[in-house]
Length: 313
Ligand code: FAD
Ligand code: NAP
Image 1 (cartoon, rainbow, N blue to C red):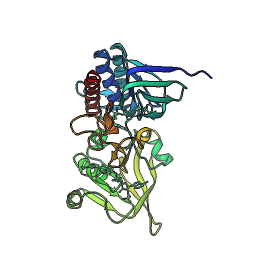
Image 2: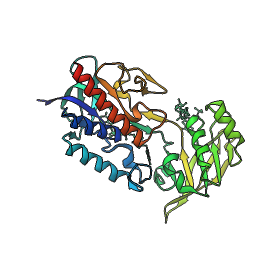
Image 3: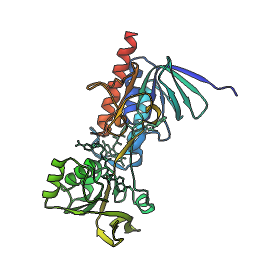
Image 4: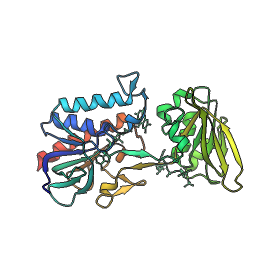
């Protein structure tokens, strides 16, 4: 079978805010970028509804925002391709990617913008209420639970940070953790334990999200004591899953240094990775901020870094 090869000066892998912003900047620098969208055209914001912290839009639907970014990138001259990269060789020049379609993409510079995904418990009821009381982003959705009870699950920094942040809105926050000690930093734990609005439920796992059908909404979670098997129902209007994020670094895990559980390491203050000509932006490299606007900012930086690097070659 004949397979096509497509060369570009800059290949961008990923179509979230980082990828599309990199495409806008690279196209305007006349680098004729090729952007590969992956399995989720538009990225993580396409699985949410209201976005209220994208500057310039008081309210915008996540999927609409991402369509506008795609249109913008194309209008500036980026080639946006619906394909999925299955293999990436960064050891030889030009960099070479193999894709699901059978096409081989080669490029002088690569911008990695494959993002990250929140880890979920994997319960059918969790899936059912996603966006209707179940969330993995307190910054995004906390505001919707003013004066209501909230449950957070997890025992790391994210869970503790989210629980503390959610006290700004909630009347009560219950943190459920499967063990008897937290992984989070001690200073964060101190704040958590001292907080009058926060209750801890140790040694419990959540087995089901409880809710109503019409309107679709969460009324509580069913928790099981992992030692005794005893069941406790905890009432809440919002259930925040904070059991970690998984960066999509599979393509580069054996080729680039990773840290903090799989995030691509970049030189501080830049998007340069350990391999010259390979840049990383957005949630793939950011275990801390994980926001659309910061990802877009890093996408811009990656395109500017790539432009400068190509000019030096
Ligand atoms: P992502 O958006 O994760 O996009 C990654 C892209 O890479 C996808 O297009 C995917 O298809 C592609 N990709 C992955 N692997 C491959 C591959 N092998 N080949 C080709 N392409 C690939 N942030 C806010 O600022 N405000 C909010 O209100 C907000 N709400 C959120 C709600 C939810 C439910 C979630 C999950 C996140 C929310 N976030 C919010 C966070 C925000 O979505 C992320 O910070 C942002 O999307 C990260 O952008 P990114 O470009 O780095 O990657
Ligand atoms: P994490 O440190 O990996 O913690 C995940 C937590 O979720 C753990 O407590 C784990 O329990 C629990 N968990 C995992 N799977 C579960 C499941 N299926 N059911 C129930 N509980 C489950 O993840 P994170 O908190 O997102 O942090 C990721 C990284 O980002 C860390 O390096 C963290 O330090 C960093 N971070 C830093 C800050 C900060 O500095 N302010 C803020 C946020 C994140 P066990 O403890 O039992 O394993």
